[in-house]
Length: 361
Image 1: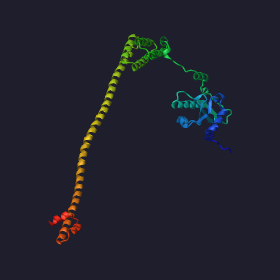
Image 2: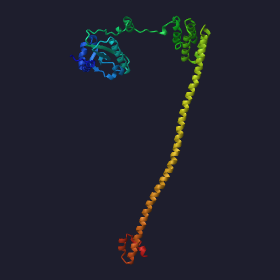
Image 3: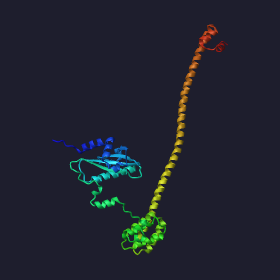
Image 4: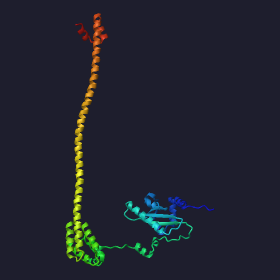
């Protein structure tokens, strides 16, 4: 019976072979398109550490990632080889997902431009040939439309280059587009109010759209400019006037309350900080004074103790000296009574000749 081989065994063998740079270099020389090889400086070929790839991505990958620099200079090209022993209908998207993730990781390292990431699928399954497309556009049901969408410039809506009269024909989008086009770039507040009034006066402008625009104006304009524009719009609109004034009033009151709340919070925080600083200073001063008093008290106690100890020691020393002198005098007196020579008595008793002569006198 034939022994079953697990996918992990295939992966392990493939990785062991491809992680050798010399093996990988030969592999790329054989399999890469000539145009791509002509750009690559294979002396710079490096296996990329798996820590380069996001941990979530690593858990889904069985591929090898190499980096090679171009002959034109220090421009990186990543070679991404995915090993597969079973066909996968979405493999083209998976590999593009790996490629996009590799590009993103490259940017996160501080680079300012995208690198080329070359996806390469290495297949050796039972089904022959590989049964699924390897162009990621084929993963979309509307392949032709996807190809046009992702192979050409994205749609750009540049409000700054669209005439106001055209914007006013954009039905429900008109009021927001007019506001966003002019509020940050036009200093003519009366003109902004006039254009917004025209947009609001259109039948397709709803109360919700008007409220959204008023809130937007309130969030980015100075209070005086906001008040001017709202009053001008209210004068010119045929409908939504009550909605505009109500939302403006609520926003202004909310802003006033928010100002009070923020002022209170700032004052509280500054008060806490000031109190903390004053407390630290006061505590430091009290601590110094207390430490000084305690230090004096401890010093006095230690001084008394030290004085007592030194006094005892001094007294003991002086007592010994007095006792010794007394013994010397007594011995000298006995020897004098026996009429011993003074020089002999001096030597035996330890008294000086002057002290002996005073005793004789």
